[in-house]
Amino acid sequence: MSPDSPPPGSVRSAAEVNEQIRALWLRAGGTLSAQERAEYELLVIEWAAAIRGRVIEAA
Image (cartoon, rainbow, N blue to C red; front, side):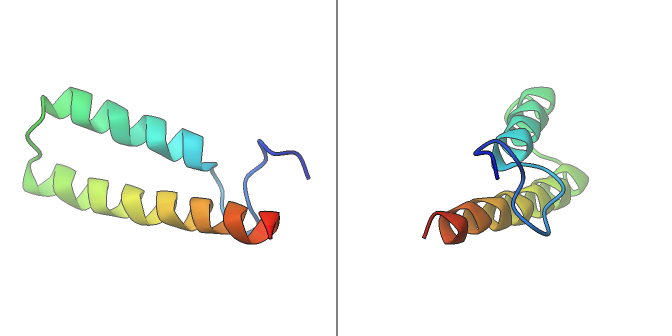
């Protein structure tokens, strides 16, 4: 499996999710609305799962 491929069970890589998180903060201008905060929380959970998958794969 290549280092850039998403871990099993994940649709997107941690880098892709991280880019989406950055874009969300940029669009929001540094202050998240309730809806943006909910989106942010889901993205962070997805990012953490992608990172965890890569760590397990590396072990």
